[in-house]
Length: 66
Image (tube, rainbow, N blue to C red; front, side, top):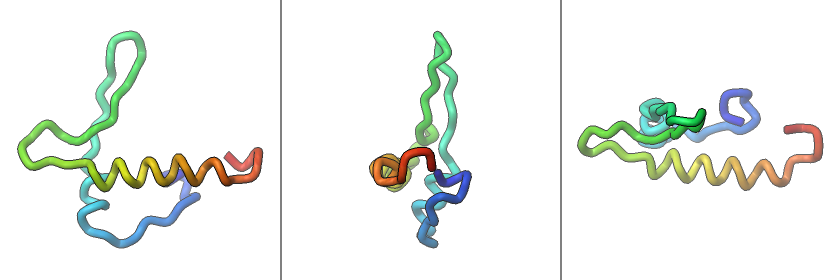
């Protein structure tokens, strides 16, 4: 929803930094995991909250829009 601009993010420096630093890890069996870097002081709390909010908002979209 973020990539196709269905939601607009606030200009919040920390949350944008977290979103930019997310990493995709490919797991055995074709699974994947998205999370924060493993370095010290890396967080993804805001990124997680944005993902949950986007997921919940998606439930309110009319059928066929997403």
